[in-house]
Length: 186
Image (tube, rainbow, N blue to C red; front, side):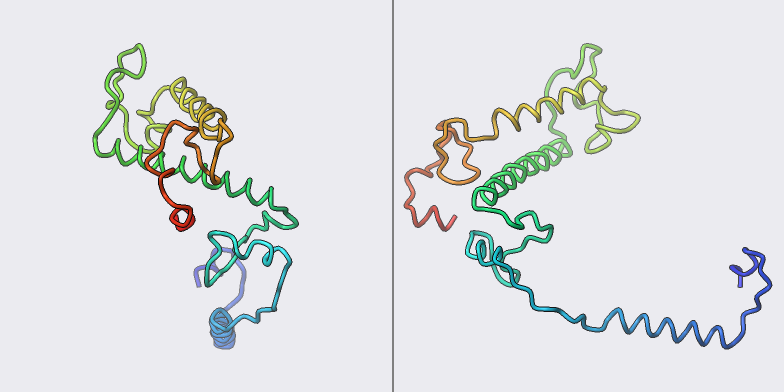
């Protein structure tokens, strides 16, 4: 009733209006849980990449945004490489968040004003908020991440054995001593 007074229209609700509203609600509720008719769709793309690593039941090859429509093998490998790289960056960001929330901070000061690293809040509040780090420090963080993206997190030597192999001949935690079958399982 409040809605009718709010817009100042002389409409009096009747029992017929309430019944119509109730029926419309029931129909909408039933339609929400009715099974949707699905058409069969098949593309050459799904058959091109359905046997790739990561395609598994029940979805099989899953590309909801259509990023690989009319794509070739080189585009597929490039997107896989970028996905792995950005996934690792997200893992490092999450680990950094967990570490600072545990109370572990870099020693020393963030700037020449004497603000220590542990004097700033954790999480998003460190970037945006009343006690956030200075704007210059935010720019330094963005530049450092850009440097990592462009210069470090890539196959510099050209000896990568698989997409996402960023060891560049520097790190080897026993990977080279493993068999090819073991490597494929991983």
